[in-house]
Length: 215
Image (cartoon, rainbow, N blue to C red):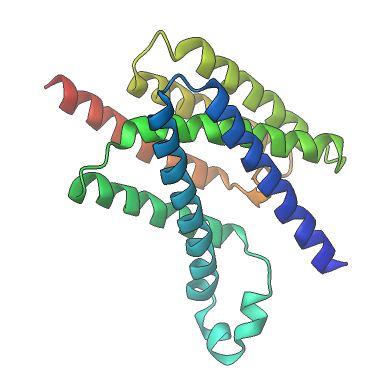
């Protein structure tokens, strides 16, 4: 039963991401070659993210892993491993932008589109199929963010658009955390303090990019 539940969860995430990638390919205003390049890079980073989650499981439970590796590897990843993976993927992208001159902003715009659509599909499935009533608030928030993204992406530059979206997402997540027992992203619980860290770090980085570009 536990294995079936775990496989179902993985299947829902996979389906959500597949629809997100398909939506991005159809509705992105990038050229075909750029779409392919971004899809390849995003896929690569998603694979890295999964690896980092597994690494987080090991590092955060190192003593248990050394004595009984299977008990750690077989146990589902918790929010701490998810936070760990987010920090590592952010550091990896920072390294690539500094050392390998990767253009992060266009990739971030593509990631935001993928994240919003995939998250909406995932939460909608949770609400309708899995009968998870706590998904309702996040579905509404994601629908608003998707509307903002497509309404403003032709009217604002990438940095301002990302600042608006990160701010709206952070405020929305904290608000949901105040009115319901928990909020999740792809099944991982998001603590208000971590949402705050994402908000401060993202806004700080985007503001730095904006000032650097205008200097």
